[in-house]
Image (cartoon, rainbow, N blue to C red; front, side):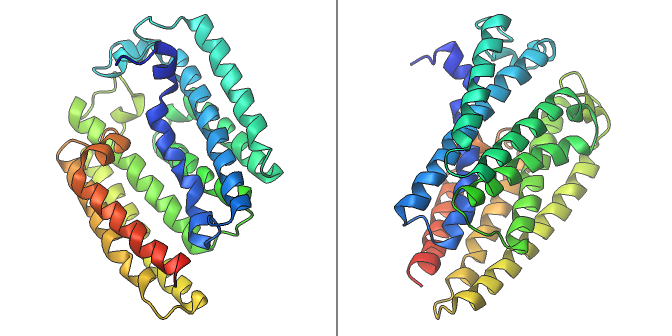
Length: 290
């Protein structure tokens, strides 16, 4: 079944990234409370609407570059299936609606949604052309999602949790650039100007640093959470195993040239899906069963 152009431009598959809003309340064990779950769901909807709005505006700004990209040329705006004027109207409506919904669960959640929009717009207009800052800006968008979920459910995020989310996001974003460079070749900046400034070796180094930092932060957070919870079952410590395996599996996908779209890697890699399920079960037992 062919997806309508406007819906395709909204990129509903990308909404999966907003599942990060459930990270903090899930780790805090409050998702079994209807109030917290409802507010977090509203946060998810708010970020999904605003994300789709920014996709419209990003593709308007990048329409010429997208037309020469091997895969982005099929996006509705680049392919001429959605007019620029229509894209402007729909993109603006989505942004306004998303921000409005963001203020329903908590005003701080609404502010986080606005910060997300400002960061995304800044990325689309300026930061995407600045090496290193482009990586940090996209990674920051993932972190803001996690913060928005915490604010929506009134959950306090620990320092180690925030560090894990930050370096984990940097790992995913750098991996996406790495996969894109492997596909297009080093020194090819026809579709993304910052690729001219990077090399595969440099991106491998960033991947190694961010992966190591993610694991250190997660391990520290897991052991600290175990001490605070007082649980006799080592669920938090055991969750480190599938987490490590999943990160290594994704790193393998990058080396195989399959990491250009992280959500598609997860959707197609059965082993990664099983590891994710195992992590959810183990971690869920620690949080909600103890």
